Image (cartoon, rainbow, N blue to C red; front, side, top):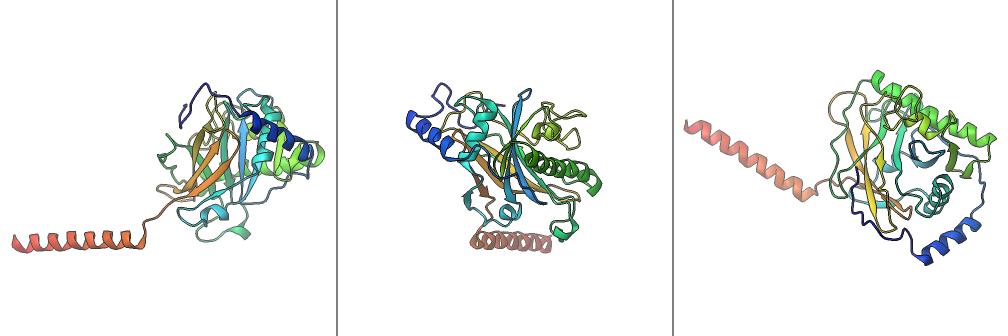
Length: 287
C-alpha cells in the first residue's frame, strides 16, 4: 500500500543535502564497533524482497517508548548511520524508496519481567493508513503463541551480534548490514515462509499479521510514512498502542507517544457518566 503524504516526481534530496551526506560518508568510519543487542531492545529493520542486503539498527530499550511522556515526540536512531547503511544496502541516493521496514522487540528474560511486562511480551509495529490515522490494534495472545515470535526476534538480535563480531559489517555499534541470504539477516527472520525472506513480515508465519510498513517507490526528502507501535502482552483483548514512528525520506525517525486525555477531560467524562446515571435513575423512578 502506498500512502502518507507522498509527492511523486520530486528529486530525493536537494544538492546541498547530498553534498552534506556525502561528507558524512567520509566523516563516519566505514567499520565501527561490533553490533550490540540486549533483551527488550527494539530493532529497526529494512529490506527489499529479493534484495541482496538487509539493514538492522538497535533503537535501545523498549522502556524509553512505553515510559515516554504522553504526547511527546523525540528522535530515535542515528539518521546519518541509517542513511549510510541504506545507501550501501540498496544503492543510489533514493535509498529509502521502495523498502519494507519494521520495529520489533521482545522480553525473554525473567530477570527483566514484571507484572506489566511479563516474559514473552512483544513490541511490534503495524502500518498506519496515513500520517494522522491509527491502525487497528494487534490482538493479545497466549504466552505460548507469542513465544514462537519472541524466539525469532531474540534470535535475530543475537545472531546479528555474532555476525558483526566476525564480519566487516557494522556501520557503528547499533547499525549493521547483513547479506539477505545469510541465516542471520533481518529478512531471514521477519519474512514469511518456513525459511524466511518471504514478502510478508510475519516472522515465518508465527505472528498474526504483517509487522512491516512500506515506503513508496518515490520517497522524497520531505515525505513521511508512519508505523504504529504496539505492546502485546500475554492474555486476551487488544494490544496497547504506545505511539507511532514517523520516517522521512532523509532518514529522520521520530517517535510520538500516545496521547491521553488531560485531567480536565477526564473530569468532563466523569460528569457525563454521572449525569447519565442520574437520568437513568430518575427515569426508572418515574416509571
